[in-house]
Image (cartoon, rainbow, N blue to C red; front, side):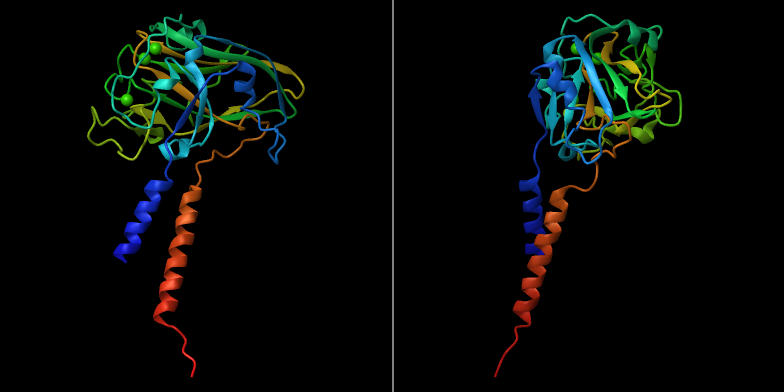
Length: 292
Ligand SMILES: [Ca+2]
Ligand SMILES: [Ca+2]
Ligand SMILES: [Ca+2]
């Protein structure tokens, strides 16, 4: 049995893959990643007039998110720093890049009394075939956990025709350092800050010191066929340091909600099959049939 457990552990380590971060190529590819035309569910949304504001370094793609502990596997990143500093190893509590980008007025209005810096935003028009649109996202930040409650209230918003719809489940709280963290709305928060909080989870393979669960954004009450302007924006607050980012799941922008890919990983099933095969072989080697 010891051999079996060792084998399973070894296989688990070898099958686990680090999060992969890829550089920004162009904004059309980036945004079109959100729509999965190949999916068996017709996304029922169309996108046009794609633009972005911010530094090219702040945009990119991610893969193997589930192995890192994110509630989704692949998609796009919008950040307040250089996405190439995102990795599977949380070796620092203060990873940051000062992009020298300006702030964002919509985000300033979201957090009265705070000023934003290093804003990155994606903007596009969309139409939906239904009366709704959905996408899956998670917010992550290096401000966690030590700068919670301070002026470094980094925030994320998505605005339809100027109004913010990025709200935490069951309430009116916005997505920001001071409104979701280890003390507030903590049920939706993943503490990954061993540098400041020994009780934090050690199983996440992500450089951010904390991140939220994966939320499904619900854009309801829309009119089928009408065009809406959507802006996704993230920014540092207080200063341009200690980065934050938003991960948005590939193929999740749809007229119907798509369940985040946080299901058991394929390696789990593979381990089950391998373990069953070993046990099967062991059983029959101990109970060999004899003829004659
Ligand atoms: Ca960190
Ligand atoms: Ca920054
Ligand atoms: Ca920051």
